[in-house]
Length: 105
Image (tube, rainbow, N blue to C red; front, top):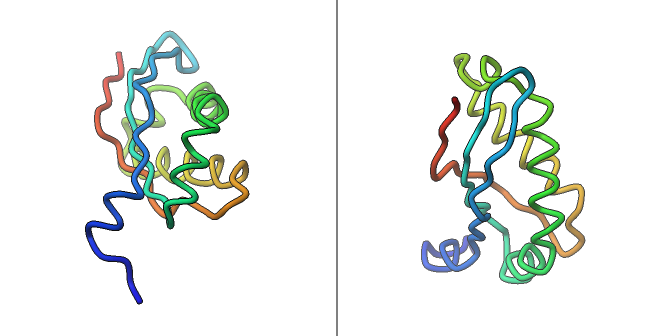
């Protein structure tokens, strides 16, 4: 059976707001919500919060402002974060990455 909207919401993990340098002279401040496929994955994300932050930072450090600003750039960023985080999870996967807030300067 497909999960209900309430289940999906309860399986979301909000990453702390991150501020870091991009390649070049730009800075980014971004906050993501990760959609897990189960409560076990949400729980694992919480216990791996330092690894989650590190995985996201490694993605951001590989990009420059124009990568993110180009058409499809935010989609690419979300796909890269999804792929990188799924590599560290052992209890399941995340199925989506949502950008709650993003500022590139």
